Length: 315
Image 1 (cartoon, rainbow, N blue to C red):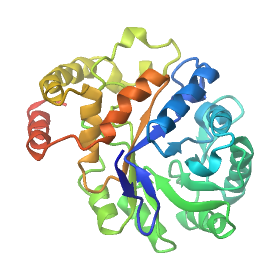
Image 2: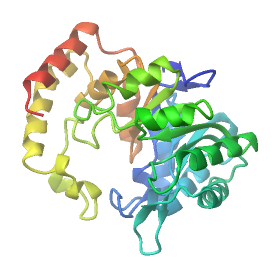
Image 3: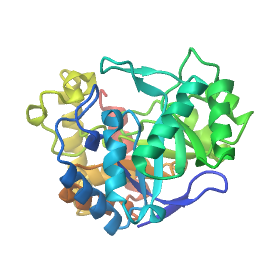
């Protein structure tokens, strides 16, 4: 699988990262019930097929995702780059709320290290901006954790240029984790060019737009507690428009003998600012389907064709 360097003087990551959101199991933004044994096999399938890094977060299943990752990496932890996040915590009633107070961040990383059964995190990221806490305090705490050796690299998720500039004034931001797909391009015009110019790596999440761009999305097959049942993008009237667009992608994917999902990931990776695309899986079969998107795939002409299709669509 292809690799790219993560930000300034960063490590080489495979262009596909294993996303561990879904394996966290049921919670406020869960994807339904999971089988931990199946999740561990899925992670092993990813690693056996070339993926060298995993993205998780303390809030995924309120800690369960990190625990499953630790079980999967027992005995091989040093061979895998682990990224996790802080800043979203359980308010005691099962709701995830922002908290980037320095004391809370320090409490979170100790809990994450314990669940992950490791002495350090390779990449520690702020999950979401907290307007109640100055950036200097939250980002400054991550800088301290890096100096203390609890995190090798530090980054942020869903930050805009203004927030990135405030962080960069304190310490180099190693990476940004934005949502980025054919159907969600908010970060494309300003944020991604800023990251490219300032050597900030980009690890894009939901490149298949949480299933919409897989070519096999079926709302009726989702678990009753799957968060996507409440997502505007996964319900009408947007859903039909998105699925119509997916059908227009099939001939392009067929030309490469790949799935529409592979094509969606390849499109994200075509952006020069993007280091890696985070792709989730709930079983080994899905993982084997996903890893082929890490090959050199999409031509310039087909990339431009897809962009023209996007312009012509009502999405």
